[in-house]
Image 1 (cartoon, each protein chain N blue to C red):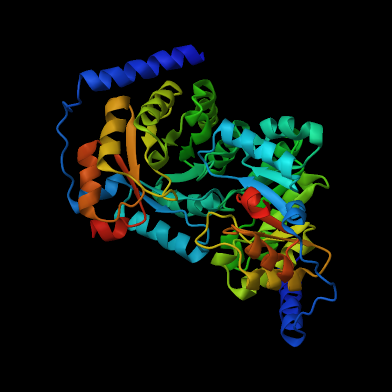
Image 2: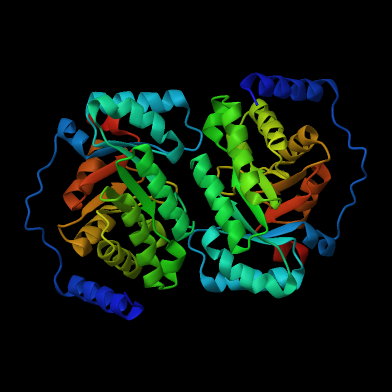
Length: 245
Length: 245
């Protein structure tokens, strides 16, 4: 795929956006606190998490029937073991949280995580290359992780707080072209997290064939519901227990 | 190496510390602003750095004769090319900034960076495993990166702002045992950076056979000099030009 091809595709997505403001044709049902559980990636990514905290995370995920647990790579074996009996998905992260590792290393990391039993991969795209408009680089960076994922769900983290609207649109187009399954707003380590406006923008650009994961700073039921109304199909949060209780 | 062996070693380092407060037998010369250049890893690790900013970093490093440039993995080929004629070292990072990738991935990342031409590797240790007192894990995590480094300088980032004094001592002991060349205070992405007290502690535990790199929040000449007086032999900063001008 050439740079020229991507530029055309991004321009076309941007102009579609301007000419036809998005109105969902789908009714979005507002989930009850209990129904919200199915949206939640129960997440613990802080670098000083202990075994005890990870075990608690897994127990809570099983009790509340969250969508998945989301943990750092070195915790995957423990979580896979913990979640096995309930066959609940384990999600882990690639190139996290800066997105600045090499494409080769991201692909190897995804491959290892899948081999360890992870079911979903949240990768950070290369923000610098996106800013430099190196679209082929950004596309191939994602493509290699999708290939390593061998059909498992791959979510592309955009870190929206660092991007312009044009860059957000480009990131969505490239993620979709590369065959990723979700776009995701934030790492939770940036200076800001998900906004309703960003979730709506991402949903509008990717259409209905991809998931949108809102993450970063979502700490209560009302905020989670606002994200879902804007088009989110998954919520990444460490506050899942509190917001669904 | 067994857990028991490491516990003894760490206990002995901790008690040596209590019984004999450190007094350097070496005179530390205060560097002039110009002399300070030789201490500085000229650093740009923000995830949205552009090609232009990286090229400027390299030009400044050559002009000021800094110790090295320190950049994210995907910038290594560009920096190696830029620095080649002056044979200035290129430093990059492994498992950065959370230290939470698998040991296998850290080793592969170090291996790739060296193959791409990097001369120095700053790796983040596994903070969670250190807190869980899994000393053999932490040691082997470092050891594998040192092995991948094939003799190149490996610095172990402790992220001191997340550690207790006992954990800082343990991290120094394990880094030294694993054959790393430096301990380094901070990633610059944590909630705090280097302190004079931490640099002095690290220096006291590792003795004179290892380097100590102070990093995170060092933005002026006076602070850099205070770190050097406390025992730092390398300064990681993005403000190198300002503080030596």
